[in-house]
Length: 312
Image (tube, rainbow, N blue to C red; front, side, top):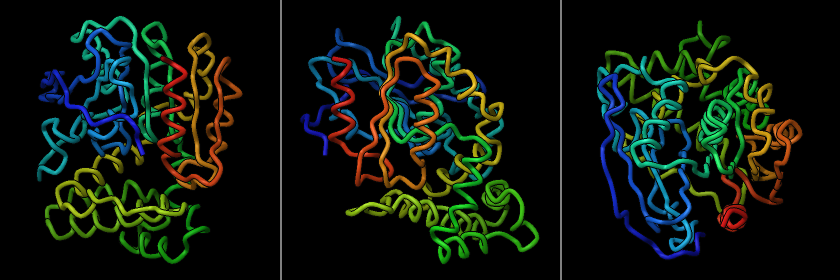
């Protein structure tokens, strides 16, 4: 669990980034501290107040935001006719640059979690001069192979749950791109079809992260609006392998040379197996790899805090 006391933001806002998107952002901690931007997972989960407690509020200026169509950003992905066509990795990278400039930050640390590691890597490889360091938790690069693992090959580990998950799409689509099939159902005109698909997707999500003792189901999945928005955004990205050239993040990891980074992954993380972080570490000069024994997706709060402490 985070050890620093709860704190509230001292600054919040809604940033107009174009395409009719307005992003919620907030800043907490020390206004004169070391800037760090927290990139949430999902994609589509939104940021969480408790993450502020990983940081010493006397040391860090903590920037959080809800990515497009997530959290308190608008339009929200739960809206019946929401259009996700202007929500891609390229759009999110541009949003981060616009927020950085808006807050008058020259360089910042990046803390990425799960999907946030993919986004953080994509941003850093495009704007290495704006990144002072990186802490990446549960490393992913969202390649076609990783998406196939998450949606199909992992059925070897959870065969009963995967059969239910696969049966959630029409029989004729079960041998194809399951994320794309779910994405189509999640935008169906019938709200019952949408909700059934959202429940099935989120049940599968909760299954493949539950590989470590003490796992608790995601409380957000109990909220119909949250689970629909989450499932819509994540399937949008998974169906298109994050809108990146396949393998580009590993191929271009040399661009991160000179940026210190700590990669933290749990040995029991089935959702983001340790080999992803391992290959990235070998391709990223100067990075550190921490594999946390007995830990699953999300590693542990203690490991996250220890990694952050490297950048005091």
